[in-house]
Image 1: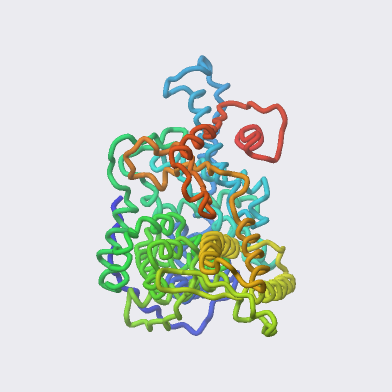
Image 2: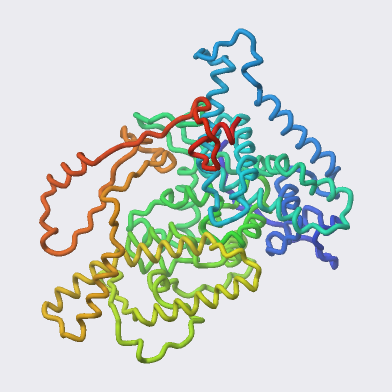
Length: 572
């Protein structure tokens, strides 16, 4: 269905003196009008999952219909779907397990197992730093919900990324039950029944996918019954996400900020490079997970078709415009592919201003010097004594910009700061796992140092052919760090091209594995390596390991590792 971008108006809700209270469905605080108002203000109360379902028109508001009857209908629908799609092929008389007939129950059974294994590969990687999603029962539940939805929606079927839409919804449903008080109304007690967590997850996921489904389509390419996309050998139509992003750029970004749009164009950065992930994951990777519930509430307040998502995209770009304008192509793309350094509340306020200028524009944040913030100590780091300010290193950020850092200062400040942060996390009851944004920032810092340190060391050696004796220990330490950061164990990195990122490619490499050489050249002796010898060496060592597809139960022993026995434990 064509997704229409239109600028609508939000009627100002009537003022009410009564404020909403958690787990209290009293009118008028749970009217549709009030829910939208509190969502825009990022003040949505619990149970948030129920408020989301109301705003997405999955169930009626307390003043507009029978909530319990609607919830019961959704749960019965999911139970019927499970019963229909869980038929045992052994019960079909006269059906041959080797039959290739499309109507064969056995063939469908094997395709279902392949689809479940495909979903499981993504589910086991969902939020690896979150203990909740490491539970086998939760993973099994996610596989079932995604499988039944994919079977009920053959096009687009299951696509990579849908598990990251289901996960926050499931986690919010779990938290609504976890923090519920004992004195609940009959309606809330019925809704928060732990026995129907899976049913309600499907209901909420299906409601969200009504607006997101179009962004998962792949033009005229139809997934097979086992959930895999065929290898594309000819040009096919662009998917809806690409067309949508092109319209966002021309109709909204260019009028709002022509300078930024021109800079991205000059850097040859198209909207689809980063926008497809933003859309399909509903910005789930761009902000800390603690901010996602309020951000999604803001987005859901517009209804199930999510008609104003494009304002979020434009607001996110404008919020980091100063950083993007100061970056070259590589740095700008790195900024766009990393979690945002601005809060979701600022993006929501800016998106609201772009929709309706009568709303105040939030203050513009300062430039987000991403490379500098990755290696300099935090602002709340303690002061460092003067004796640690002697060892410095200059890193070239671009052709015209350099940055000087103190290695000892960073080491001392970083250790003290992380120790303080660890004590703060312990006092807050954290389980000691890192947030997804922290992991991404750490990986970004490692990538920056790995890319910049060897060239800086080589430039330093060239500038100082005969370094003074006092500088020799510092140079030796830098050389040790550079050697430590090299890719020691692998000269090749096995990369499987993702179909999501190669939907518009026309070559035969789509969906296949490629061997990408990683060659770290240090010194003049390695700079003149014969390229033909390198290629010959790569071909000799290249070894492709095909993805094993489990059509039947092939493992004798059970294991918690999904790739050892995906069907016997998880999908049967």
